[in-house]
Image 1 (tube, rainbow, N blue to C red):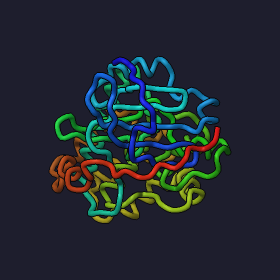
Image 2: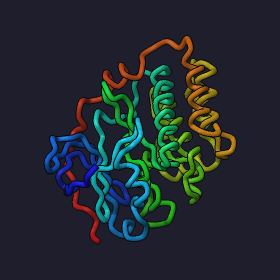
Image 3: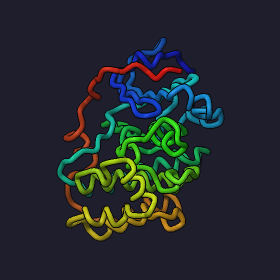
Amino acid sequence: MPMSRLSPDAIPGYRWCEDGAYGLGEASFEGASTRRVLALTFEPELARRAPMIDDAVANRLASPPPGVAGLITRGASTLVFDAAGAPLVVAERPGAPRAAVELVVAACHALTAASAAGLRVHGGLAPHRLSFHAEAGLSLVGFGAPPLGVYGWVDGVGGVATGESLSWSPPERLEGFEDEPRSDLYALATIAASIAVGRPVWSGAATVVGDAIRTGKTPSRIESLAGGLPDAVLDLLCVATERDPKDRFRDAAEMRRDAERALIGLQGVDLAAWWRENLPARAPAEPKPEPPAA
């Protein structure tokens, strides 16, 4: 896929956090029709301290495996990914356990294909990095890009991140360690749990959320919100969110097998219907504030 030039100013719907911004919107490229994209723009100092994405990952994303969004263009501090479909938005609404488990199955298929293609870890799964298209299905967006709003907080740079931006972060990331494949399973399970119970698993002040995650309270938090979730669904979500990665599923393939078993006989709204009923067709545009000074 040839890299096209694109200014982040061309993308509507930017949302700023402590160390950068993400934009969900539509943009036109030279010689191509308008496409839905996700743009990640990092604070210049953070972009100078670490590469936003390395060449090996960028080359693999030029022809991405099934279920993985491709990288369209990259600059010194901005990455733009193909994000066909509508992004996921986690908010308070009726719980949908079947949709949640179907999300796990689809995402684990994509993670397994990505691993086979040499993309070892996503490292930043969050709701805005999941996209769903009626025909293409689920895609993981932003492979290989650091999670906004987290690294600056861990490193003591850029103030304190919001609790929302930490909600999907595995304990090892908040303790300053590198993400690994089972970190993705943790993030996926917290997103799926939020769909299953009908509200975000974590919310509130970043210091409170961060401390709870680091001390391994996510499984008990999910249990407290679970209500009448079937045991197979609850077990799936709690195993994947254990504090120690060694206590989680070995890999995405193992988690997918448990999710497929949990789907047997599970009634309710499926993933496609849940996405269609609860998500807007396009992300609302918001005024973009001035970027931080270099």
